[in-house]
Image (cartoon, rainbow over all chains, first blue to last red; front, top):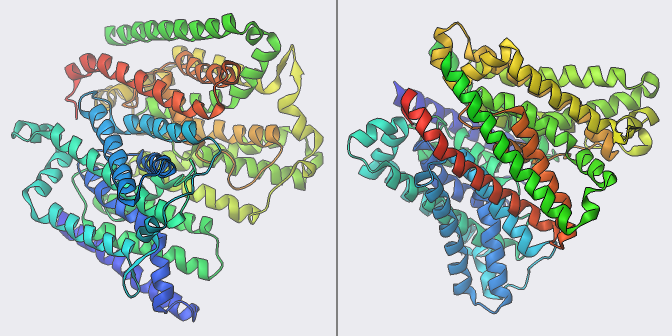
Length: 311
Length: 328
């Protein structure tokens, strides 16, 4: 029953995707063009890369509001590194390392500090973003080495950007991990009933910690890609992304109560998100109008099953 | 009936501790910079903090009932735009209709959140994340993306929050009045006791004839109404209305609640604590330039304070909650 309704949600997303695709190609002659579509993927790949581990975290019954602040902190760390002459490989290490460390702090607060994850990560969000502001103030860091630009601006083959390739690769890895391995099953179990999971011998806190660390690491990766694409760092970088990324995950059919969700749904939601943003842009409709659509969709996602189950 | 009394005294103890901490901070700053305690400066501090105080009190109601309102800043911005557009269309109408309009509009927007949470039992965080986007988008549709500037606002409209009475701005008086009303109402009214009960243990509350969903609905409605009026105050104080005002402010408001000792799990928190939390933030904000620390450190310090506050309260709560219900 649960699997069936989940499947229905994913097919609905796929339908929305096809519909949007057909509609936009009929509306604009510029839409159905490989280069244009390839450009459009930059709209969502960085956010979608963070949405993957965050989906796991939410399925496990936790949440991380600090992801965008981690991106900012990692970006500032890389900017400072670059200003001090660190090379491209070093910068990637700094970006990923900062993200991982920030994720571990979140994990420690939730598991050792026993703070509810929403509160802990609102705190660390303020702390990390605050650190970015404290260090940088109103300055901009933008002397990145030339070779660093390849991650956010380069292409792997033809129209497939490195960002898109990474997203596809990780989507497959996360999908297999969540749906085909024992660890994936445990994540569902932890989210569905943490107490029962603990009594059945699962080291619940170890899983929680690992998922927070993973989410931090991928926020660091998003920071590498975003910084490389923009070629500059301000403390306000990725501002407001946390709620967009969470929306993406929930839109993908992941339950905020935990224990339910799929990577296919999240990937589809990311594609819908990117495609509709881009299409509306072609139609000269500002992004803020899209937010009404996103908001309604977000409520519908949770309201429809609630209404159906009521009968 | 002994359980609520124990919790109450715990609250009082925590509030006293936090009050001592806030006072210590205040005295330390005053000791180093005697000018800080000048009446003029303190009036400014209260004026800067007034809107945060009112919003945080509204947010506290929602959190007490185990909800959260992420749409509070979008609600504020939408009602602020409504107020500005209304004032532009009817500049002679005065500010009473503006107050009524924003109070009702904000209350309705809050009630939307409340209905979805109560009747459909949807997760509060998703509902208000959704309405946050919708309300923001609605501002754009309403204003077509244009700004309403100072020269398009009537004199009365702009003057009210700044008007001085006994050395304090009307905005400050209003926040003091709201705070006083909250202190009294949370202690003395049945609805408030029901809200604490519903947030503390929804199942037990349900068995004793309290509908926790209905309490959440009421909390959201009151919170929305406060946000609505704050919309007018914000727009009048900063003399401009546009789509992005108070963007991201919802998390600052929640942060103020957490610093003030409101438990995100519901049922625990006091009006005094929340007001102290806001003043604590206000004191830090206005003393940073005196100490010679860049204002850019404000957010970092807030984050550190939140984490210390929640780490301490997580330890305390553990002993109490495990007796009544399993920690999930």
